[in-house]
Image (cartoon, rainbow, N blue to C red; front, side, top):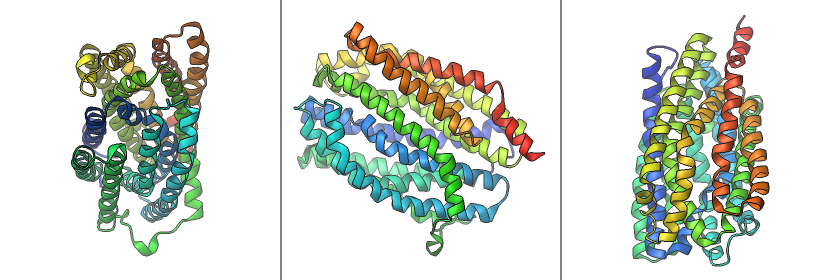
Length: 446
């Protein structure tokens, strides 16, 4: 456990964020291994099927991940307030709910994937590989959900090291199985998906086992795994807005992807390769956003309001600076990075064009995500939901629908991201400096 209500603010946040950063780095690397192995061994049609999978996967997985954000906030606040019995109940409610949602994700994913791919306008030469990849991937629904549930519990308690250990094991397993299944056994894109599924179940099993052995209020006892209706209502009350936000934004990204698909399989491969590289920009964003959610929730639970404010400022500034440094690096070296996935000059050209349109605006992406993380930690999950739905969904789709007809080039689509990141950042800054996210807790504490 890591009590974030005491000690050096910067040290606590960095020590929490660093393992998350390393874990996300490993995850990004093994996602890239998927694409490199598939692209180099199976060709650009298979690369298009795998590389363009992110938005569709996030449409389904992101909703469930959002639901469990609420569990993390409840656990963090109860721990900060030293309500240890409440921590116990919240942990077991989250585990029980995860065991239900995992199989549900598998059924939904396998059932709706072909329909969604058709709605996205997936080219005929890419469709068979895409269907195969997604159906195998969603067989691992339980592993994906339980890994995120268990690691969310660790993080809510201030422990970001154990999720890193399990992700390291998962990354190594996925990499080895990718090469074995695709290159040597010839299993195709289904083999790449199967490697991911096996790795997810392994990491979920390790995380769950550790939770049954830890010495603390968050220890899982098999006989205690059940849903407490009152706690589940609180967890869903906080998590549902984030789940809705994730899914609706994912729908917007699916629409964006369908517009990219209209430019053909080569554009899909090039842009899909860029999105893999873009994942590195999310490393400081994801790690500091997670750290800020835990830091704020614990400190507001402990009624340390000034400490919550100071930590929020430090985390935001650090994340923004790191994200922009990564963006500048991508802007300068985009051809080399995209060239890792394919030697096709047309594929590389599409990826480079997208990188050089978006990369210098990563600072705004970081700012929006960190402010959303702060507000979630404060229990104000509806604020980031409305801001991001308005900017990253409604405005993004409206812009693309109109602008592509006026300027029918793929760069028009790329510009949608910097535009909507700018708008959301402006709104978040205005809201943040009103400081309502802290005042509401100060009033409750009086």
